[in-house]
Image (cartoon, rainbow over all chains, first blue to last red; front, side, top):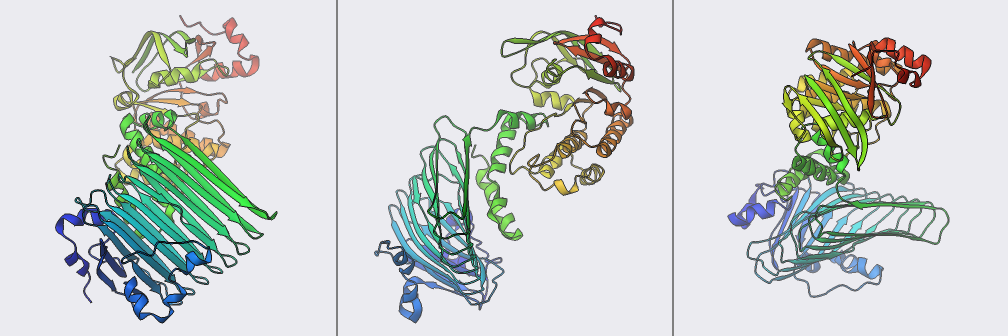
Length: 367
Length: 239
């Protein structure tokens, strides 16, 4: 199998924007790749025997056990989900296998006014470990586009899934991800969300249910909100199993856009721990950041906490860096760059450096 | 090197420094004593050009240039450096990141971080969760990599244990001596005087400079009699 075959399906003018969403077009550092443009799945291939990756429609036809997954996470919470989807991926990592290189999935909006609606399923079997990067982006032509992404995650006993979603849209695209993750005993689910480019509107409130005891979940988000962008981003974790832990960490910078940062941790068992941290920086008078952390329980033996801090960049920090010889503009950009620290994402070194570089490129000239 | 002539400074409309005169030559270190709230830190911050410190009278002359209207980073580029008393923490900004901007020499960074027992701190967010002593060492580390001709040291040894004062004092005195750098330092404890050979010292009380003298003698006298005696002027009064 030759790597880099995905490149044949990517137009030269699409390369930059697709790469900006974390997609490695060379496939050198990836174990499997999926690419969908508008409603067509144009490429789907695994380079690892431990990873299954396919169009969700093929999975529905070919896999006898798909009925255990498709729609089941939504059903478990009595939630409805749109049925008129076209495409999406099915990814499964085999039991007990550690997949060293990340899997990547690219959802690309190509045509003007297109309404992309996908349904994704990710199954990480017992004891398996994997990193998954989903990169979503839009072409120059995709004015007024819309993306709806339904995702159902099944993280089985003692498994580990580190899911990083990078949004790289354009200023007139609206986006609505809907996702539910079910996490079993001793398993860990880490969800990273990065959105640094302009977008018209993103609304999402993914939910993770820690069903098994000793399960862990962590949601991290890094959001840069440009003028006229609107982000309504939440993360919810339901601590159902005993001794489960959840952490929600949100960092938002408004350059003039509006951000609502929601977070909800609900403790439904005893001996559970949850922490919410929301930090916001407002760099423009027009910017709005609204943090809404929520915690809920009717048990006594739980430990839920939150901290939220919103404001402008501290004058002292700017002055401090100026006293080391930086100009005020350089100081501001160093502080904002530090604030959007990729270290909070818990990524392995290779991927951390990759995302760090991506962020450097994206933030250059943003403010 | 640094000359301050008839300097008066207001903070939020209130007169904090009143008609300050002094000068420090190349290769000289001077010490500033004074009770809390007397204006010592204000003097240092004014020399650095920090916001909120308004010069209403007088001049600050550095290397023959009047720098009253220079921005902080312009003053730094001209050769001023400061060691903060209470530096702010900056999330996500690593000490090593700043160090690499201050010095292009990886070897210098490594050696200085070893000397100041900071190798484990290089990959940490700057000042975040640092102890008092760690902050001071990190401040000294940065300012030495910056290699300024004139150092402003605001209580470099406060909160530092004796062993680390020894380490810092040695680093500081080597730096000042080897390259004939100048310094103005504020101290309450006097420990730093064991290491740094300062030529003169002054006492600041209520925004005015009162006495000038030998640092060790002056410190002894303050220790014995307190600052009230300074007003009675046992040392020759500054004009």
